[in-house]
Length: 113
Picture 1 (cartoon, rainbow, N blue to C red):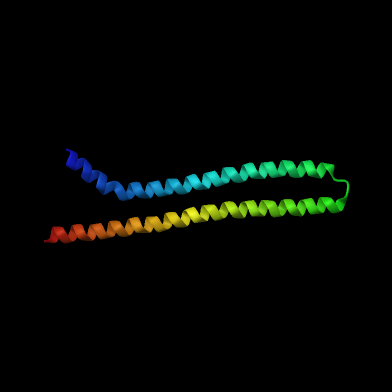
Picture 2 (cartoon, helix red, strand yellow):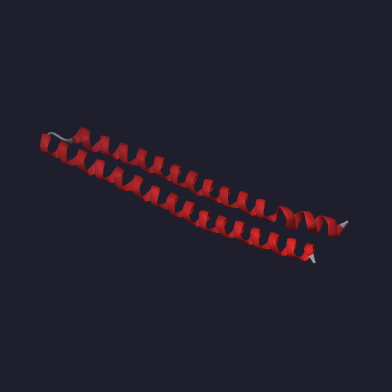
């Protein structure tokens, strides 16, 4: 029975690997989303605190520009992390499929002999 279990495990390994890669991408995306939301809330609170203290319109404009740049940078950084995770997973997924195709070719060749 152990041999059969080992064959099943081997047969489903590519699927397991692909699921693991997808889970890793989702985990990275969720972590970046959480980090981005927390950072945005913190930045927004600080921005509002500074805005209340301003008496000069020029300072209000400068604070608004700085806040906009900060949010843009945060979003860009988060997106780069997610894109990197997706790219890595894509490359690894491609390798899993290539390995599966090669293994299938070898199995068919051996069976034909």
